[in-house]
Length: 254
Image 1 (cartoon, rainbow, N blue to C red):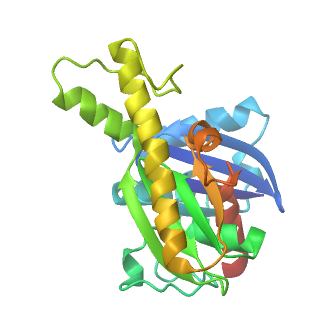
Image 2 (image 1 turned 180 degrees about the vertical axis):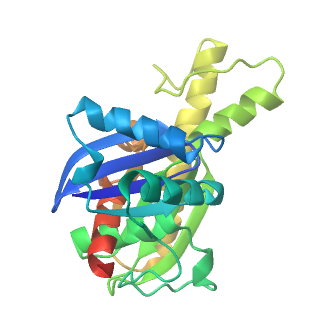
């Protein structure tokens, strides 16, 4: 079995593959203060819930945009699994040309998503990943990574509004009942939700105008299912796109 770990700024998404089949998956909070032992105990408890053991894991691949945690998870793999993980980075064989001014600047998660999206659809596409930041990545018909855009994530945008406006409360992220709200909480939810839908559609349309290709739009990440139904541009939500990309990259580097 293959253990795949995607480390984001807000969440760590973990999956277990049996050949090409994703058999288990978990989403836990990213905590830079946790030690490798603490993460090991947490993972052990998750495995135990499904009568799984660490001995069943034969290989591990990690994608991380949180450098302080990369070493922590490498230690976890060595200490608890007796395995050295493949960490997605500059030496990883992606099978994809990176048309970026400095390819080393592209986040590992963006490359993983691009590889998975093109492998699954074999067409030019835009991948929108709703994470701590929302990323837009364009892959052309040749399967080349052409770049994209990065916007503040929905959650941190809402948090900034709460922190900088003294009289505004902290509210949940959800679709409000109406765009024209009748109270402060719904007004904030309307502004952030519909404003973000507009942001997504606006950036996607800009990329489409510049690309001249017929682009399919795939959404992934924790809030993709919330935004996609209201978006005019998102064609499909793929909840496990990043995990699938890690599996593909492991196979290419095995």
